[in-house]
Length: 438
Image: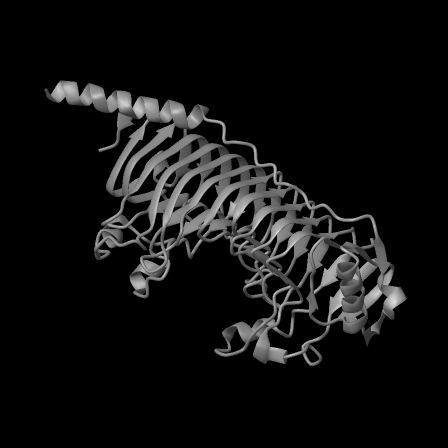
């Protein structure tokens, strides 16, 4: 009978592994916005590109004129245009020419100052909207960043769309937002962000650190992030709950927290593919985080063909994001002995559940003194069905796997001071090339 159960378990694992590795996630091809062929030059509405004049009214008047005409392209031509908050309308493309800079008003002139935090470019329940052109949006964020440590201060986001359908952000360069650069959330769908460049100093910059300057926070359904070049002071990409069908491909990531999911994941996250991307000096490569007060079901996540150089931790999956106890906060130093003391709790509808996650063809080097990776589930909700295939990592400290079921390493070479494929384990069922690790 025992032999019979062993054969059944082997066949189950084999079929799961084969299905996971060979499965090809559906291509994500969001519908693009349809914009009427009408143009509205902001200079015709009084805008002056002298980097002195407040152009808020002039640019908003151009946007409103396009909206009243049923939509069109609002053009910002060559020049430097200071501006305050703008509100989008349906069927609108705000096009910034290659020699143009749209610059947020400085902190002492920004409407609402540090009290309101009104987004620079915003839209709610809109359809067919776009931001295009090879010009720049400058957030002038440096004076805002220290306010991240001030309890009640509010900082504006650069772009904030919510509950919108058919959104395109293309080719622009965005720098130094006071807070997040791009946020698209709520029940948004058909979102494309491609060929954009986003820059802000790292949060560890010794001279001018930026805080919470996430590059691209996009949640919803049917999302494509393609050929972007990002280096910021927080998440390079992240999404929250109620998100599905996402493809991130061909992107270059520098400073930042890596490609993340969470921390709020209520409503679930599914069918995410990250492929053909590079990571250099990121704090993490892949980062999945949540906790018991904000979790949901995360499943069917695929990471493949990734190159990571000098990252803080190449693969990080954990459900203890809000832990306040000091011994659980330093993820680089969590040991099996520390992890197994993490208290259990009852399973609720907010318990983070992670399953069916595949990492294929990944090469990584970790920053000096850092660990190869960490997969850390909850005592009451183990992370399950994880496959690492053709994963090569060089790091000083071992890959930790705590509270996890059916973690399979196939043709992997994880090299640390402990040796090759020497893992740090507790409450984990792990196999290496089909052999269970004791």
